[in-house]
Structures are given as structure tokens and as C-alpha cells.
Image (tube, rainbow, N blue to C red; front, top):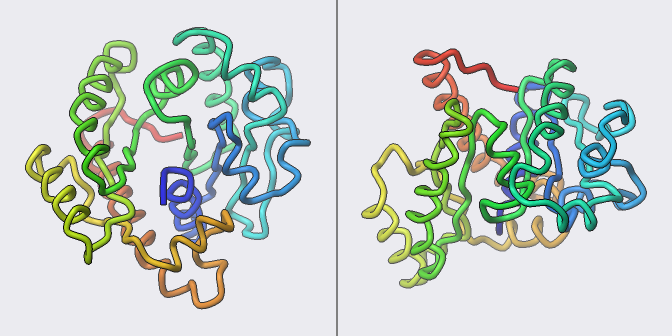
Length: 252
């Protein structure tokens, strides 16, 4: 299970807890949109706004069955916009999008980006208040985490308020030595405060939810599994609260 499934389930957890939540699909693959609304390729979305910031937010926001949960799809311009422009090319328009979202008084706006620190993803990180790093519990991926954190520290020059909330381990297979050893290695690499205590286990129900692109609670017998994301949501809330207590941080 990767970043998109984590984004969907964490956003769903915030919405279930009563937070007015907006989930934005900024991955050009459009995984969030395709998961939660099969007509997402026909919708205007995030990348369409980057191409034309005069598009009103009302055309971009898609409600869901849960009153407190809405999403913005990647949009029809995702293939073009993602492949055109270096880091900084869309910075002003990304920030305009976030201002428009904030004006609608969402309690939290979660953005699922493409992997890496380049292009539009770089512009998003340079404009947001906080970032969560999902990391699969596998040896090769673990080795790249310190370099990623170094890159995020460099981005603080452009975005001093950026709060790296931490690394969340996903697909942790507690019965597989390679997976648990990778998790142990990450604990040795990073200070304790940089790792979420909540991890996402490799479990059949999470894999089924990922395959269907749904929040795990939408599956039959999936309600019990929601506790994992409720725990992660509580950790995120606590980290954001501590950040607000020490800075002038204002979440979108």
C-alpha cells in the first residue's frame, strides 16, 4: 500500500472525525480521482487550474457521500502540465489554489503528490504547511529516506514554515524478516520524533482496499481496520497542535 491509499484513508479518517476535509489529487496518474469517482478524467481538476487559474473552485470540488469529505481530481490537463515546467514554474498558481481552498474554510487539505522533489511536487511542498512521508517497509526504499529529508531541509529556504511531520511506515509485514529489518533500520537512521508510531501493516484487507481504490471502511468487514488510520489521524493532529503552539502556523 502506497501514498495514494494512505492519503485516501487518512483524509477519510479526518472527515469521519468531523473535520471538513478536502483531498486533492496532484499525482498526474490521477489515482485518487480514479479511485473515488470513475468519471474523474472527465472532470476539471488541479492541473486544469494550473493551466487556467480563472477556473472557479466550484467547478473543481467533487462532493462524496460523506458530507465532510470532498475531493479535487487531477483533471484533464494532468498529462500536459506534469510534463512541462521545472520546479518553480507553477509556484504562484499552486499558492493561488491553496488560497482558494483556504477561503472555503476547509479544516484540512490533504494533497497526494507524485513521488520525488521536482516539478509540481516541489512547488506544492514549497507552498504547504506540513508533509507526511509514506515509506514502504522494504530495504531499498529505506536507504533513500535520509537523502529525501536532506532535500526537504533545502526546501525550507523557500518555505520556512514547512513542518516535516515524519515518516509513516507502510506495508510492514511483521512475519517477513526483510520487512521488519527494514523498519528496524529506519528506526536507527532517524530520531524517534521523525517516525510515526502508527504503521500500516501489510494485511489482506488493506491490499483489497488499495486494489479497489476505496477507504478501507467502505469494504465489507473493513470498519475494524479503520482504527489504524484513526490512530494516524490522532498523531497528525497532535503534531500539528504542537507546531501551532510554537509558531504562527495556520493549517489550510
